[in-house]
Image (cartoon, rainbow, N blue to C red; front, side):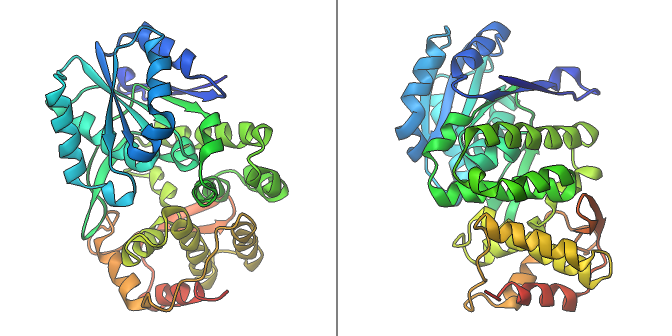
Length: 365
C-alpha cells in the first residue's frame, strides 16, 4: 500500500494521507477507527455504487469497529445540484446525525463533490472521508478539498474548500467501471502528463494498450504518480489562487462542451476535447511546437477519448458558455496554455476568433 501525505502547512490539522492499493478497505477502516474523527459515519453513495459496493464496504468498515449507515443519492452528473445536497442533509437529520458525525463519500466525482459540500455546511462543518471508486475521482477529484454543485448557468459555481480527513483509493473498484467511464478517467492522467510530468506522458504513450486493459501493474504506477502531482500542486496552492489553476488545462472549453451538450458529452471526453483545443490555441498563438500538439492529440486518440463535436452543437453556443466560467476574472476568461509538454502557463488574452477556430477544429474526425 502506498501512502502519500498532503501537507497543508498553514493548517496542520487539515493535512491528510492518501492511501493507495488493492483490497485495502479493511486497513482504511482501521485508520478511521484509530483516528476517531467521528462517533458515527454515514456512507453516501449513488444508487449504482450503493448496489455494487455499498453494503460490502459498510460491512468491512463495521468490522473495524465503526458505526456506519448508508445514505443513497441519485446517480449521474444531473444529481450534482443543491437539491441533492439538501436531500443528503435531510437524510442526516432524520438519522440523528450531529456534530460528532462524519460522512464517507463512496463513489465518483459527483458523489465526492456533493457529499463533501454537504459535510462543509452540515452543522457548520463535519469531517468526511473520500473512498473514490472511479478513475477520475481516484486521480483527481477526491484530492484537494474542492466541493460543490452545478447551476443552470455553469459547473461548480456554488461550493466550498473542505479538505477530507483521508482519501482511501482501492484500485479494485476500477474493475467494475463501465468501459466508457474508465476511459473518461484517463483524461485526467493524460492532463497530468501534459502539464507536469513528460515522463508520465511517455509511459501513457508506450503503455496505452495495457492501461486500457486495466493492467493493475501499470495502474499501480500511473495512479500514485497522478496523485503525487495533484497533491504537490494542492500543497503549494490550496485555494486555487495561483499555480493550482494549471489543473484546469482543457477544462475551460471542456466544461463549456459539457454544459452545451446537456451532459451528452461526458466529463472526460469533454476535457480531452478541451485539451486538444488548448493545444491548438497554444500552437496558433506561437507558443507550442506543432510536434507537441500532434503528440497530445495522438495520445488522446489512442486512449479512445477523441470524438468529433456533433453538428448539433453550435460553436457560438459553446463559446458563449465561457461567460459563466468560474475562473473568469474582470470579464476575461483565463486559459491554461502550453509552451511545451510539461510547461503550462495561464493566459487570459485569447481572441474570440482563435477560440472559435479551436472549437471548429474539434469537428474533424
